[in-house]
Image (cartoon, rainbow, N blue to C red; front, side):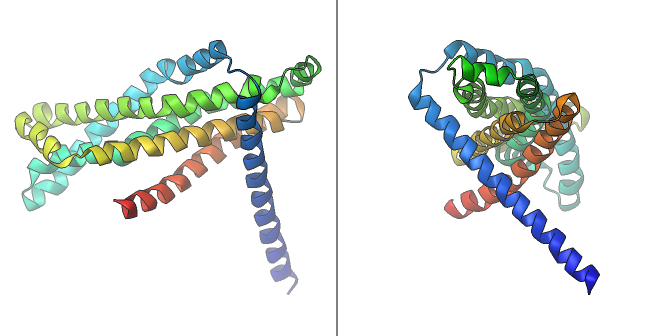
Length: 262
């Protein structure tokens, strides 16, 4: 009986901890959004973050999309060959990249590269009392630190998702035409036939929310950092792990909503 009660106690603590963290995230996001209306947007800072999240991430996002598209083409070929529909490789790669893999993989890569940087940078400022110094100088830390990162991620992650999807489809084309020796015209024609504008919109909507999630959690964890240098490492890890989990969870919810709305 004692072990059962301990199990329920631990479960209850985990549930309350998660609810408390979600509540903190919502309040943090609300405070950050309110600061947009209280102050003018710092466009220099915003552009710096857009370059960091977008242009500086092209290489890793492009490589991820390229190899994902190539693997998709191979896997689709092995499955399609069984039933004699190898002409469907193009739509399979295109739909998978635009609706699902492009946004998700882009968000996860940017979380690993940029989300960790956001959390560690703000966390270092927190433990070295630089955020307190901003408040002493009457500078809103939400406006100065979190808002540019959140806005930049919401804008740049969809763009990077498009880059990832386009490069992935191109990778599938290379495998389809040069490695498998299939007709490259059919590959392109079938994509035009089956890929709809709605599929692209669905991917962009997902990427927009993924950018909001990863930037909010990463900056939130930065502001929550305690415990010196060790705490910076711990909270940075939490930011990356939580962002990845929430992105995958949001992916399921958004897929269900968008599928039912179609």
